[in-house]
Image (cartoon, rainbow, N blue to C red):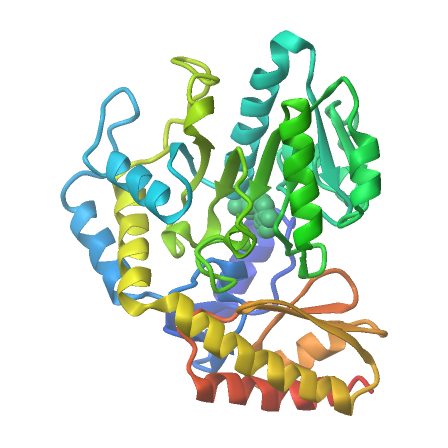
Length: 393
Ligand code: PLP
């Protein structure tokens, strides 16, 4: 089928909840190709999903092999791969126990249910969330998401979520009430503008949770899986959560989400308390196991730290050149460039010249390259961003 026929089908049959402009048909490593055969350097990674690059051979092979062995049996039966993946998650984070789902929203939804159950008998159910947060589009995760616009038209909102300014320790401490059960934080906010939590903020949240017997919940859906130069972003701080969600890059594009809870909380969700038909299928777990194995074998964390520094250095250089750039921030290869003017024209300019990038809100350029980028890819991106940001000035 030719590209224009595909576009016509999209317009006629797919609900218009998105407004995609490009048709992408193939990917390899840091590149994707459109329907006309044009190649792009992809600094979106499918929104921090293809962290190992497109169609990484180890992940592709694991999926192919498992697809010919056993795809799905449901959680009424054990499969060989789910416990191995849970153990891999424990090895790469804290020694917890894991529930598997299929997406970031589903992982967070489960984590929210975990918190409600934890506080239930004490009448505690409120979760303190952050301004600038994004946790998903299901009803509970939407209620935990700061941007009111996303909730418009879907009221009444699910009760039990309050908001404080991100990184404001005093407001956080003041927000704890006798109804509070948990504090929910993205260690680096993604959609909210690529903003890292401060060490002091995370330490305060941990101390408040310890003091009041609350749960500290981290959403690592976007910032996890080596994106920031640590397997999970909280590891920059040495401050452990009571539970943590992950998804996106866990399967490098194969849908899988999960949340893991500290062992001391393993009894909170007992038999029959939560479920998901497709959670942790052999196929999804095979993909995710290949992701962990590959990340370990590549020594990816060191690579991310090194390339992240190079990329940040280039962006800081552009900030010196263009006064419209008001901030360069982020961690590892999760970088944001804030501008005093709307960023959309720069995103379009970059795409027109072969570089795919994202925005976060109206005035932050969000850069999420595959973690396997090489120096020349970063330098090409800086060159193209120089032109794109120059066109804004
Ligand atoms: N949490 C964070 C921090 C996210 O960035 C996202 C998606 O962008 C989600 C949750 C929701 O994940 P999903 O779109 O897989 O439901």
